[in-house]
Length: 286
Image (cartoon, rainbow, N blue to C red; front, side, top):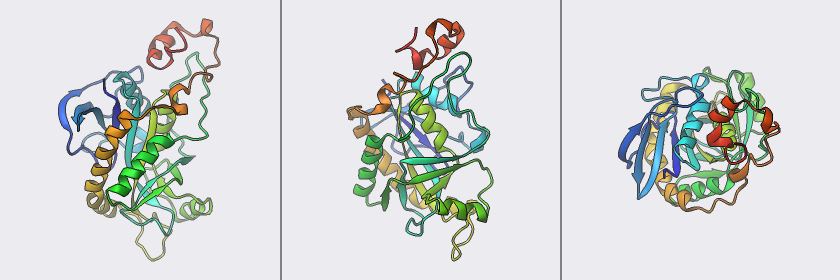
């Protein structure tokens, strides 16, 4: 069994310390994931690593096939996903190279499929608490134990991109008391919840967006510089979190998120839809 999935984002395209066993191409009803899954072991725990943007960073945030990425993890048997991504800071006290473990999202995206449902089946999962708190806290503990400056909780604004914010937008998000801003994690969290997979994200601060008067506006050169500085720390946190996440008792709401969420009468759900979604809905509808 592959218990743990790792999604690496900008600057974290591979997993140091991963004893690679194979690369596996996974086909899903929603198309192809971003890349083949790298299957391996870290300290005796079987994991599947996925490069979010594809190796070589080929895919924009709006081009990512979020449904295929998460469905692929489900097909592999993954029950917990640990995500890492670059973010901008909306707070004076969150400095570049700090790490934030957000627990909430604000959606500013426009063009992204973010549900497995439709095509004759309707489900409404609870999403008030979009991050698996148990997994997030254990990652936060691993970060502090490694010596990182870690901040637990907070609000992640998920913007469309690929352009960065205007200055007016940046100030608006600060007025909402947002903590960080990024382009990828919300859809992953929504789909993981529908798939009954625990999901938490490690947000690596690289810049102050464009609101901070005494700092340069965000640019790719600056982002990559801070990501390189933090890559070793991020890898250490993931390595130390993986065994604990694999052994953790899953007593959270993620485990049976679909139990009361599917509204459609099973008798009218198309057989093709049942077949496609069987890895997700098979516990409840046959």
